[in-house]
Length: 437
Image (cartoon, rainbow, N blue to C red; front, top):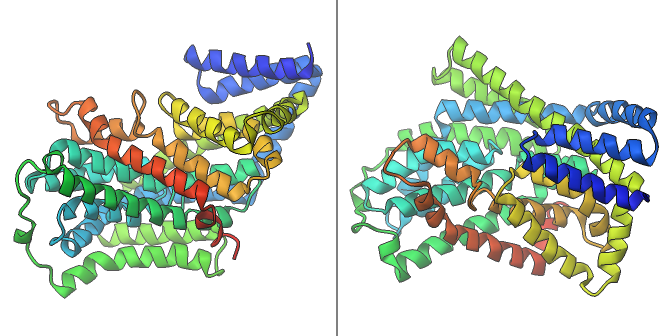
């Protein structure tokens, strides 16, 4: 067998093992080891495995993963998400479907201090959905808004997916964070426009009855300051320090985690047992992410050794479909895979194969990363996998609420994300201008 044939066989084995239920990281390790062993021999495969493990995890940068995960968990337990929603609820009280728009922008702000979509879905399903239903919004719309806006957590910095992409593409984490600002704002605006269109053109899909938002009590200046100060503090510490050049990404994560810990302690929402549980959960998430990165790096090196990515690049770019035909196929494949596999796994499986093709096509790697993240996040809202949808279902714990109802409610926001991808393809500067400063 030639190297290219072995590379194709390794991909087929990987997909087969995943379908059979093997954990994705383990499946990638098995397929990669077998591929290298067939191309060279078992001794080379063992040495490459050790080299990959050392090279992948020795970077100081990887300390960012547990720090941002811990910050997100601390922010979640301290009630900052509810306070963020309360503030936007008051600001948009006079706007038609204002609670839906408040959920979108509150999620956008919450995303800037957590970076985990599932955390946003969990928090706002408990905070925003009951409030919207109480004010006359349909349950389908309420859960759909929360599911849709939760994806902002992986686009607006800091973002765990951006970190994973930066590592695989060998790009700067700081520049990848900056690249998510413009698209994050764009997607937030598109979500808000989607809600307004639904409210004015199809009000029956939004309201069970006319929402009486004017009955919401006014907030005093002191209450607004009390709820808004922690949010402003964390955003200033993390993003201000990072983009102001005072902190590198790892230091920004450490400062953010310390700030989130201070807020949780000040609000007395943390006790020793809960803090220990958060530390354990942080460790579990971090280890799973880092193991997947090691497996993906091994997989990437095996494919490079096989010569498959270079051959694929020549076939696709030099063939009839051209660079943008390749881009459309890639986005479509990501969205389809999102129906079955989680976000990080999709990136770890596909990027080692497509990044060389994207480079050969002349695509900006930062822009390509943003396009990838947006496409991957669509998978959080599409059946049958739809991780954000199942998170909302679990958090609300209402037997009368069907998963299908949440999926249907999130479909308008899937369309908004597709529009976002089209706009980013036409105007790539939205993603790249800030990162290139």
